[in-house]
Amino acid sequence: MRETLSDKVYRAIKDDINNFRLNPDEFIVEREMAERYGVSKAPVREALHRLCREGRLISYPRKGYLIVSLNEMEFYQTQQLRLINEGFAVRILVREAGPEDIKILRAMADKSDCVSNTEFHCKMAELTGNKFLRDIVANLLDISTRTLNLKNLLNGSNLKTYHLEIVDAIEARDEEKALKFLEMDLKLGNSSFGK
Image 1: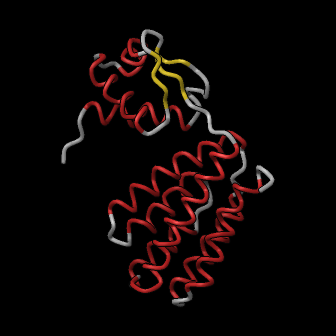
Image 2: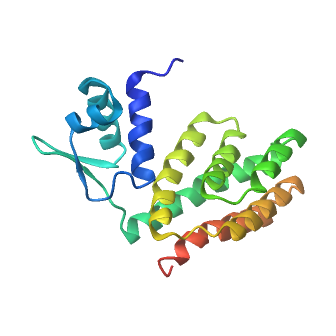
């Protein structure tokens, strides 16, 4: 399926929000976004409405769109949903992952930056073959990673260790161990809020 101009603008705005080129609690307006991305207002409007449906923006008629910031409870709830959905992915991978899947995950786990973290978790969901699961995990990761970036909390060495342990456990078909390290990985973010 071909990517539309609206899809491109949506990704650009989301990327700017996630990387703090657009900030929480900031108002944005269609006209300024159209100028920023060099497009007409129509694809910007579609992208902004999509971001509203996802809960990233709040629309205020005749004022613009407010970029939503995540509070502690919302972050914690997002992490709970990640554990449920990514735990489901891990259970499937423990049963079904082949040698090539393990090789892919191991190569990704060997990296330790924020982008690699997102790619690793999305790849686990993708390898289940369930497109909807991958989309859900990607959306939850966008939300939680943005908060972690804001608090500057992602510790690369711990991420790498936990990711490699998850891959080792999947390869060994050890569901309990894989889930334990997934939970420890997600608790890195929770600990930033004292949870």
